[in-house]
Image (cartoon, rainbow, N blue to C red; front, side):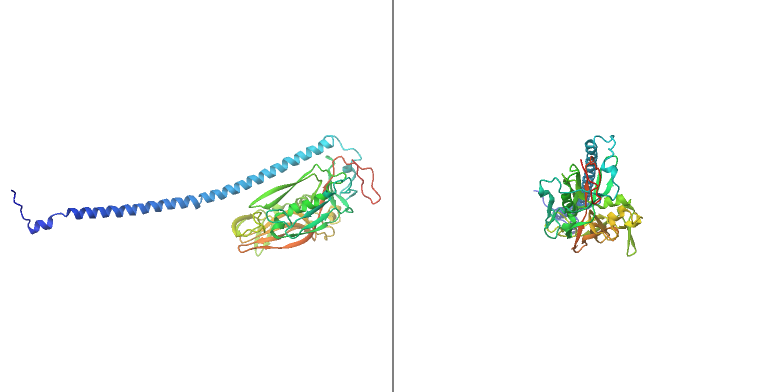
Length: 402
């Protein structure tokens, strides 16, 4: 039997403690694994955050996709409008017997001058009298209306009509009411969202009379330009509201040259401003957004003095558009006055010799302010291209026949 040797004190001190070493090693491995795990989680979190909200993150790309969709939809609407206009022009030519066929000597387009009176009666030959009136509802943000109250408008048969434009190639003659008619009150966000529609709905009641070109298609837009516009149409009527584009075409004013100086800052047409504001929307009953949202608005409101472009204030065309600088009426167009802190949502009108815009509602980071006003409208009527005339009536207005 082997005798166990006793260890000296020195040997006891030098003998390794195997169990204690294993425990220490196991504890070390656990802490390192924990640290590595935390580091990996932090890296994954950073990658996830960057993918979500980074410069090219999911949210940013989603916003870009939304903007790209809206721009594509707008371009599609514009392309459709151009196509339908071309189709209208072709149909007008066919109705007249082809654009190459010269107009007969008694064609109305060859007889009249700008500003002449034409004996157009919007009630003549109309059997469905329901077409001769329109009730504008108060509406909501999600349904069209004026934002103020229910208002009913009926044809004023004693309205006088003057020649606004003519085309001796196509035979088309466009008339305008001698004076503004039918005071319409518009209010706030709802009024702004559906401004173009309500004006056109009122004016279309004048487009069914004898000689009116009821094959025309007129377009208007509703909604908010950033959130997305919708295109509506007026069909079966030869009448619509005058627009600021109509006036600009006559005066030769170019909106893209417009600048506005305020508090030492110059604003230019088409400039973009990003801000956090309340805004008009078709998604709520009130027509106002429920919270302030960051968005980018273009500066598209403007105003100018008519006499700066139509220098002959005694001409027939100046008198029809501006009178003696005393005509006041709405035109079916909208714009936005925008800066880094706010946006004023404008509608266009004519007053004191100016084509101008002013707001129905204005948004900042705290609220959407809303306003109302009552102004008249101004219908224009397109006559058929085959309209002829033999003479004037006792009042001096050119009589029409088909």
